[in-house]
Image (cartoon, rainbow, N blue to C red; front, side):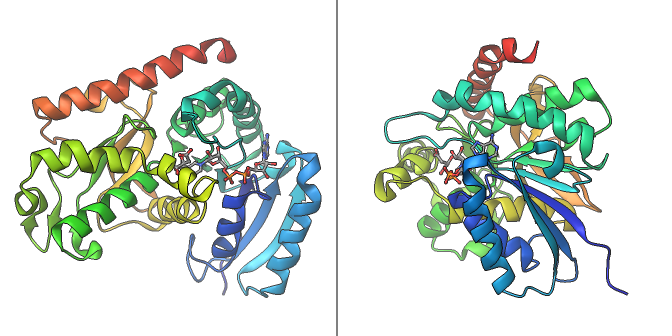
Length: 329
Ligand code: NAD
Ligand code: LMR
């Protein structure tokens, strides 16, 4: 017997990431090749015509797993009974802006959506915030949801997977190893240039990648800035922010969370106090996923250099948290 469909709400459905994301969800790449899905698409009133166009194209793919779709500009309708919510809809930054510049413009969206999710979605809904600044937007949505109750506060995540994937590609190129051989990558902190991409634990076919590379100057002066500023480099090159790679990372995050992963994955999750990160801050941590649950990997040694890097990215998140405090009263 076929499985009951899962309801996936996607905001910003008419945008660039939406266009790279929806077809892959409908083809089963996110929730499994045996899992029917119903797409619940949210966008602004002026984008409804474009959403309808995307739905026409989805229809034209005749995806066997696509069990239904709706388009709406009402968050209460979009999040009704949702199993997964992908919060993509927000204004992207342009050249010369930092992601934090979007804080007030986009923050207001996430108070409304966090409340609507908590009031309407399934109690065990999984929420992934992609819209920037994604850690703090996830923090805002979670805070709004906590006021309502009902949903699981641990299930409001920010997307650090793009940074994780970017780091893996840079390491593969430097070490000469296949990207698929690299395991145990971590990106700590904020999805911003302050993030700390940490390959101290990374292995390739049993070899230490740090020992293979053995170049601290490259780590500090090339690798970290390249990964941290990759979003800006793409905006500079394309004139638009990353879209297909962002959609790919969102699929990776949710797929591993729901279906499990054999490797460590970086997820922006509300801190439980691990590694001295204050509770509730949505922070990039190394996680393991099994049986539909994620768990922060414990007990990793944090050396002095890493402690310094983690403190910088935490300070930025704490400043962002202070900047939105009024929104959450
Ligand atoms: P886009 O401008 O192409 O699309 C955004 C869509 O969101 C538009 O259709 C717009 O109408 C819609 N929208 C705006 N406000 C909305 C609201 N309140 N409710 C529902 N929909 C709304 O942008 P994009 O390139 O798809 O990027 C979307 C977001 O994702 C941006 O904030 C961008 O910075 C962010 N992003 C994050 C990552 C990451 O790694 N976390 C990577 C890439 C992009
Ligand atoms: C990215 O990392 O590509 C996105 O967050 C878009 C941006 O503004 O950098």
